[in-house]
Amino acid sequence: MRSPLVYIIILSYNSEKWIKACLTSVLATTYDSFKVVIVDNGSTDNTVVEVSKFLPQVELLLNQSNVGFVRGNNVGITQALSQQADYIVLLNPDTQVTPTWLTEMIKIGEAERNVGILGAVQYSYHDKTFNSWTRVALADRLAELGSPLTDTVWIPMEWVEGACFMVKAELFQRIGLLDPIYFSFYEEIDFCRRAACLGYQTALVINSRIHHYRGGVWKEGRIRNRLRDYFCDRGQFIYALTDPRRTIKGNLKWYLITLLTKLKEVIKHLDLEKLLRLLVIQADLLGKPLNVYEKWKRERNLVQARTS
Image (cartoon, rainbow, N blue to C red; front, side, top):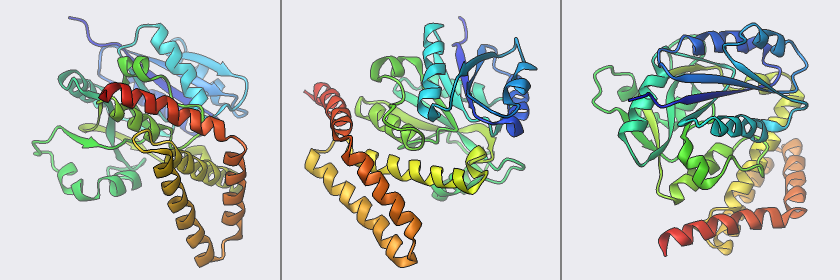
């Protein structure tokens, strides 16, 4: 019986600082059936030069510009599906994986039919302390995660971070790719919600471990930080407005709760920069109401079809 074919998609954008260590660790993976695809989003540094040193062990796809996390990864996902991948992993370039990370995730994916999305436990980039995502998302499970004697092999999650995001190919075929209504941020949370609406479980695999710097290129410069905050806030509003399990009225309620919560922070800290950002986002969303409505309606129809 053949091992499931896994495509590992690494989206790069000015990732020269990270990509060599990332690829070196990925190519040392002990699992016996995987391929690596680098999708470069128009890097202007030496990322492509560094990646070329790993050819032909990896495949390189070039976008002409930075089309964002979602559209960039969708290029790689489409390529993987065309090659009959069984699983597809989205992996950030500012990661280093441990040798058995992939084997451990495949074990759970193959054993658990209803698990459609899997993630790894994340260490800090330079050591084996848990990084900020792990400490926040799994605050009540840290002792268990640190114990090599734990009987738990996976933990059900509402979502796992897109830095290491394994999806069964059948799930992409059922619900589509990452939603391009997002540029970056919240797209993986949205995808996990869409999967849950069709009965798929998201799992964190206890024995799959990676090191993740978190932030990567987003931390490099004030302008990048501002863009990160913009896309993160924008994604949160879209996510609040498009829950297919709620009515339009219910989603508008959560949108207003989100907006009022953020405005309270603006007032508390007299943060005029954040106020401007919120106003620009509201103008953006008001200018494209059909995009948001059509997303909600499309996914609402899938939920209703499943429950009818």
